[in-house]
Length: 82
Image (cartoon, rainbow, N blue to C red; front, top):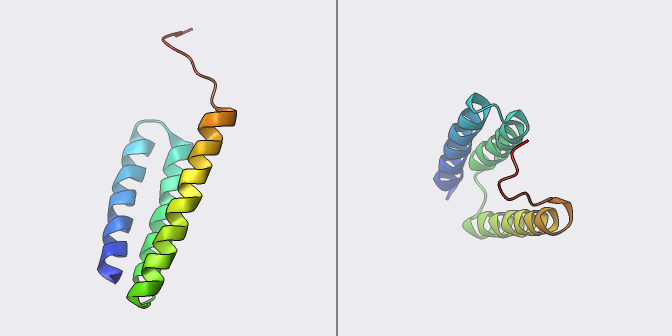
């Protein structure tokens, strides 16, 4: 299970580089933080049950954060490029 977290770290690092090249520095920093989190967890050698609990908590935090952002903070703009 630790290899799964190392793989997640690899892919989030790829996304961080692509966001940085695309000029989205804040999103790049978020993905660098996620990369560090996943790689660190990959080297802790926890039990498989603990890895599943951590991943479930990670998903809950991400879903709640995205829902909060899209409901209360996002200002929709449909094609208004000014």
